[in-house]
Length: 89
Image (tube, rainbow, N blue to C red; front, side, top):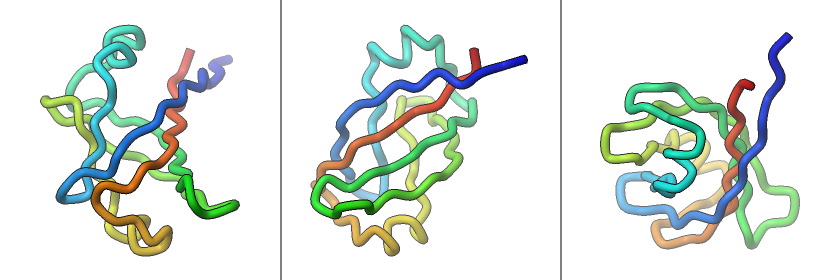
């Protein structure tokens, strides 16, 4: 039986709906480019504003947030958010 391990970090929404995953987290979890990640995105200014999604890790260590989630949460480039990253153990 596999369980999910939870890792969280703060991130800024960059241009083109991209989020940089810190290199320490990528190395610790041994994440490879092209792998799919399960995320929960919380905005820091909305109470209860969060969405779940599955994103693909690019070779530069970034993921792209789907535009539907960006629109629903009202995210703008430069906005701070808390990312919860689920990985299987």
